[in-house]
Structures are given as C-alpha cells and as structure tokens.
Image (cartoon, rainbow over all chains, first blue to last red):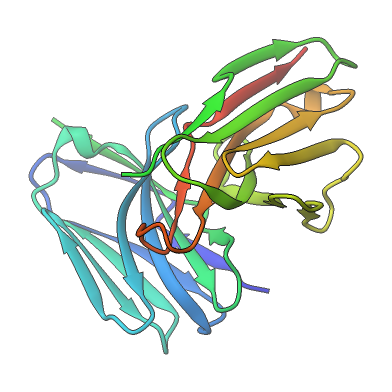
Length: 112
Length: 119
C-alpha cells in the first residue's frame, strides 16, 4: 500500500526566505506526482505535476523535483511571501490507478 | 481550465438525517469521479470511486450503505450521507476525471469541497 509522508508538518519562516518542502513515498511504481496548495477551509489548487519520466517542473517561484528511485520529491519556494501561507499537499498517482494518495501536508506560515 | 463545482459548500444537519452532496463537472464530461474525505488537520483520504453508469467502488473501511454514491450522468455525481452522525462531520471533496478525447490533460480536477457538520 502506497504511503506518502511530508516533512515538516509545519513551518514558519520570515518573508523573503527560500524554503524546501519534502515528500516521500514508499512505492516507486508511480505514474506521476502532484503538489497542491490548500487554503484553510478551501479546496485544492494544483501547483505542479511531475510525470514519472520527468525530474522537475517549474512554475514561477515554485520548483518541484522528483527522484522516483529514492521515493522523494521536493517543492522549492523562492523568495517566500505572506500570500504563500497555506497547507501544501503532495499526492502520488500509482501506475494503473487514477485515484491519488495524499500526504498529510505541510502547513506553511510566512511572516511579513 | 476544467472546472468542478460542489453543492452545497457548507451544510449543518441534525444527527440521524441524510445529506446529499453534488459534484458537477461544468465544462467537460467525467467518466470517473472520486470522493475524498478530510478530517481537521489531516490529509485527504479516498472514500470511493464513482463511475458513470455503474456501481461505485468503495475503499476498505468505507460503508457503502452509509455513503451512497450515484453517478447518473457524465457531469454529475452525488454522495448521500445517510443517517449522519457527529463523527461524519468532515470536509468532503470530489474530483472529476475527464472523458478521453476531450483534449484535457490526463489529470483530475478538484471541487471546492463541502463542509458537513452533524449536530
């Protein structure tokens, strides 16, 4: 059974700092990995999707990497802003399956 | 981009009553929809997979007689929580998978979620 773990569970940083969020998964037979943002009481916003054949994806100040063999992904946020404050979820799609397995998330607080 | 809506966004009900939550794909046809549940400060857990025109597939530990799913059309799936109890209070999120051939990327699109509170 696929298990997805995110570290740290919570993170508080001053504005402007670069930061890294970590995600690990136990079964490397994945189809893709996706990073989401969730604001309190809200739904999910897809940030980046990395196919299993890719090593990284970039969107603006966000960069996500994937090391499938070691079962790890990182989300790098450059020059953090208070508006980045949210919970960040990592989700894995296993080969042959459409549903996603989610990690427990990292709650990020960026202090102005 | 593809849009998925959920209705209602928030519902409060008394214990023992039934509540229906709708999930709609607004600008694409979805052969498959997923229902997830999220308890406070926890992650999303898949409850069931809803396929248009066939019975839903439930994850282990999810009572199919309590959480009734109907995927009657290519744009609508409903989740009915029957005889709701306070422990059913949670955030329910649906996602929709597009019908192949519509030119949308191979991914699922999430609804905004429904907050259920059972008193």
